[in-house]
Every structure is written in C-alpha cells, then in structure tokens.
Image (tube, rainbow, N blue to C red):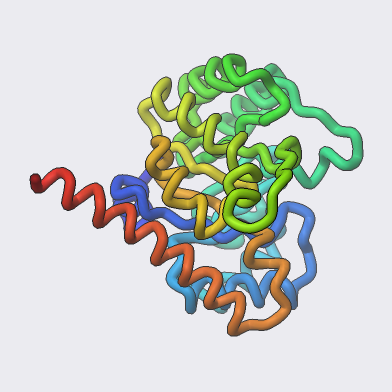
Length: 252
C-alpha cells in the first residue's frame, strides 16, 4: 500500500531514482558504499537484498526509504521487521546466468503469496523481460489485481548494443524502455524502468511513461566513492531536466 511520502511525490513527478545494490550482493562494505552514494547523491530510495542484517546496517546510514528484493516471499518478513519500507519481487537478471527463467504464472503466484504474508506494505514486482512484450503487459495487469503497487521493467541482458558511446547506451536500454512504454499505458500504478539505464537514457524512460528509474551497475561498478556520488547526482539532474521540460510544456 503506497503511503504519501517523498517517494510517492517523486513517482508522481517522474523523478524517482532507485539505487540498486544487487539482489545477490551481501557484501556489507559494498552495500554500505552504495547506500552512502545514494544518500549523498540525492537518490529517492534504495534497493538492497532482503537480509535483516543489511537492512539494519543501511538504516544506520540513511533516512532514505529502503526496498528489499528477493524471489522467496518468506525472506521479506524478517527484512520488514528489521525496518524495510518496501519490498520487491524481482531483479531476476542476477539469476539468468544460472539458467533460471521466471514465467508469468510463477511471478503471479509469488505476488499472491507475498501479499498474504504482508498485506499492507508497498509491493513492487518486476515483470520478466524474457516474456513476449504483450505477455509482459498482460502480466502487469494481473499483478495489479494481485496487489502490486509498483511495476518494474528490465531487459539489459537481452540487449545487444553494437555501437559505443551514447548510441550504445540507448541500444542497451531499449528493451526496458519499450516495456515501460507499453506497460505504463496498460496499468494505473507507477512503472519503474530499470536495467541498463544511465543518465543518457533515464530521461527517455520518463518520456516513455515511466514514473522513475532503477539503476545499479552504472553506480556499483565504480570503486571510488566520489565517482559513485557523482553518478547518482548525474541521474538526479537528468530526471530533474525532464520534469522541468514537462512543467514548461504544461504552462504554455
């Protein structure tokens, strides 16, 4: 259940930035670095693995809303008890290299099971990009009926950029932006566009209909704290630019 908050306001304005440390990242030092960068860089909220120890550590470092990710509903309960504000079924891309595949029926079942365990917390669900686009849209509508408050898209794994630079960044983000475009027109809840997003493509995601973006590797791959903070700030500024353009257009 979405509560009125800075997060909700950011989603309404198309300025939400979720910084993702990784579903399989349990390295406290690395997660802490991501938490600090997200906080100092001005992100809207965080996404960390559903582990109560990580939640407690993150809570000691930030006042940002903390989302926890898992593909096992039971893992959410202790993480929420430790202080998590939101939960996310998904970030499946960490498992694709292991040969795992997530079908629509499985994701829907996970959502229903999670809602039984935690009926009131804000719930985000990722729609697997391995599904055909029309099935992604259908699943998104089913997830809303099952109680999802946010839908997240993905797609970087299947993207095959063939160019360097800006064009390559756009090619990498194309699958998740396409999903955000289609899904945002089929559901009434916010859509977060994640996977392969950069400061170049974040504005494109918002223009396509997303209420915000989720970014992980573009920040986590950096080993310097200052560079991580700068990366977050560049994303915040990119989203702010889109918001200002929309506001100017509405005032004309």
